[in-house]
Length: 175
Image (cartoon, rainbow, N blue to C red; front, side, top):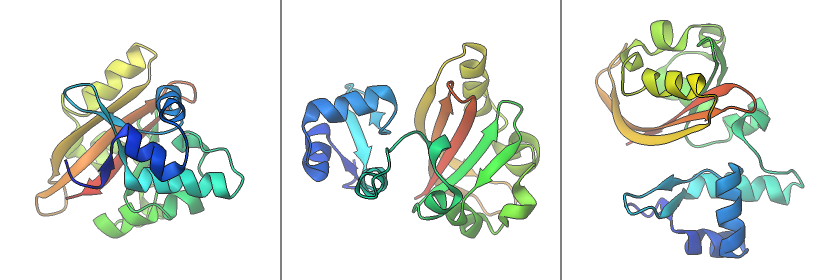
């Protein structure tokens, strides 16, 4: 795994807190992580920087739905937010630069049929549909290739759903 990902112990040291805090924040959804095949948590360095920045500014770091447009635009990966009907309501500057689509033209589009039809499949859309049907959160990370309106482009995507706000998120990390 690349050094963009930190273990629980490394994340705790990075943030200057104990491992118990890191685990609690991960379980509460306050701090995003992925789990290895062995069940160990891994934290993206960029997510930890965002979290630490919010803490230093006196803000309570929280779910993506709590970020302002400016905070989303400061992230070094793409963010696409959409509601349970698939309508896009958030599209950050990084994603706009990555795809060439302007935020204003994307907002209001249907994510799976108009914006990213190559993700309208069992690998991506079905995961969101299942989480919605089960009224549950979703956090799944996978390697993927986007092919719509661009040459085949490998990415790592994080598929997220916040049941408490009924919002869905796709985080796009170019590889």
